Length: 111
Length: 114
Image (cartoon, rainbow over all chains, first blue to last red; front, side, top):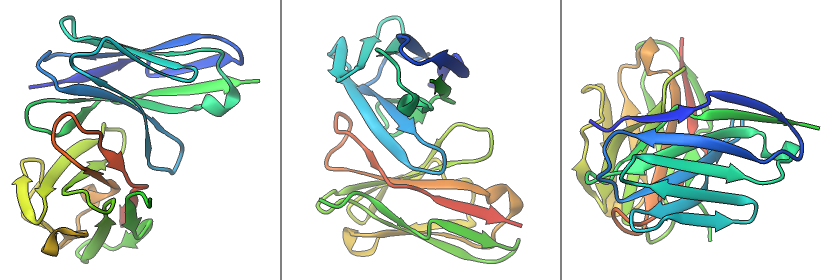
C-alpha cells in the first residue's frame, strides 16, 4: 500500500530564504508526482507535475526533483516571499490512476 | 477555458439529512475524480469516472454515498443520511487522460454535519 510522507509538517522562514520541502513515498512504481499549493479555504493549485521518466521540473522560482528509486521528491523554492505562504501537498499517481496525497507542509514566510 | 467548478462552496446540514454536491469538470475531460479531506487527515480518493462509467470506486466509505455522472458531463455526490464523520472538504478533479495526465482540482465543497 502506497504511503506518502511530507517533512516538515510546518515551516516558518523569513522572506528571501531558499527552502526545501520533502516528500517521500513507499512504492516506487508510480506514473508521476504532482506538487500542489493550497491556500486557506481554497482549492488545490497544481504547481508542478513530474513524470516518472523525468528527474526534475522547473517553473519560475520553483524546482521539483524526483528520485523514483529512492522514493523521494523535493520542492525547492528560491527567494521565498510572503505570498508563498500556503500548504504544499505532494501526491503520487500509481497504477490505479488515483492520486495518493501526503499530509502537507504548512509554510509561512514572514516579511 | 473555465476550470473545475463545484457547488455549493459550503453546506451545513444536520445529522440524518441528505446533501448533494455537484461538480462540473473542465469541458471535454472524460475523467472525473472525487476526493475528500476530513479534519486533520490527508486528502483521500473516493472514486473515478471515465465518461459516465465508474472506473474505480474503491475509496467510497460506505453505501450512504452515491455518485453519478449521467451523460458523462457533470457529476453529483449524494450523502444520505449524513453522519457527523462525513464532515470535511470534498474535492472534484478532472483530467483529459489517464495516468500521465495532470489532474485539475476544483475549489472544493466544505460539508459540515451537525
